[in-house]
Length: 120
Image (cartoon, rainbow, N blue to C red; front, side):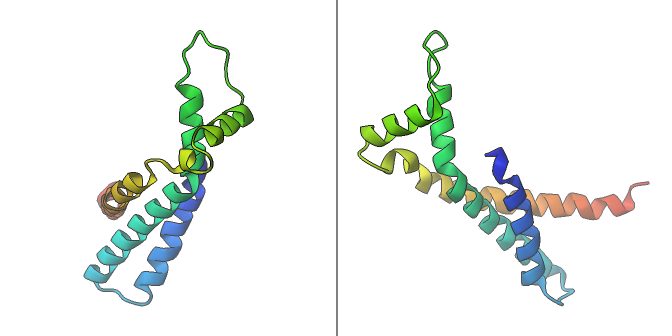
């Protein structure tokens, strides 16, 4: 998940600026930040989810067992579910959760940024 932070924040900033455009209205800014945050969260999870599934499978092995190699895990997961389903199981629920979570996250992010003006 950590490798998508560049995409996550970069996409958020780009989308926020495109949505706001030349508008100075506070409502437009809040809605733009909310939409940009939600969409950034969705795309971040969409692209990283298969890798996160593999990482979780590797980390869930008992400590006493020999560690699984990355490609061995990929092959095993693909064989168990006959294809890509092992890498996307739970993605729908994650995406449903991602939108509102990231809306709130980025609205709070912008609120904190606007407060720093008042700090010494």
